[in-house]
Amino acid sequence: MVGTKGHSGKSPGSRGHHNMSHSKETKEKIKQKCKNVMVIHHIDGNHYNNEPSNLMQVTPKEHAIIHNLMKRGYAIKRMWDLK
Image 1 (tube, helix red, strand yellow):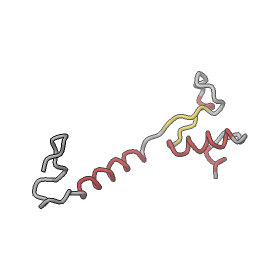
Image 2 (cartoon, rainbow, N blue to C red; image 1 turned 90 degrees about the vertical axis):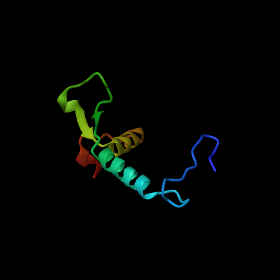
Image 3 (cartoon, helix red, strand yellow; image 1 turned 90 degrees about the horizontal axis):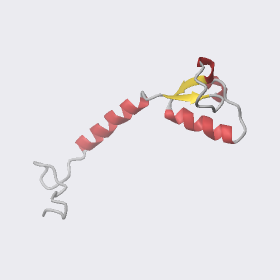
Image 4 (cartoon, rainbow, N blue to C red; image 1 turned 120 degrees about the vertical axis):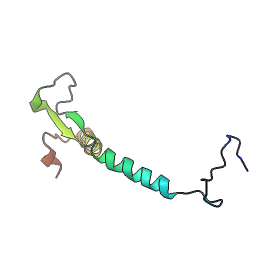
């Protein structure tokens, strides 16, 4: 039976079952690509200060941790300050 959006949710040849392996493989590939994404953190919080000494390349997860710690009053100047 076709749903209201015109798609049954079943993959061709799947004998009525949705083929999830393709979806899992795609999600894993996306995760791997996202691991390589980096962002630039401005140490002093001034986004106009682009001096190399004020910039730190971090992952999005590290960036969130840095900002969370900064809200709590910690000063993060180098990545090894997090360890």
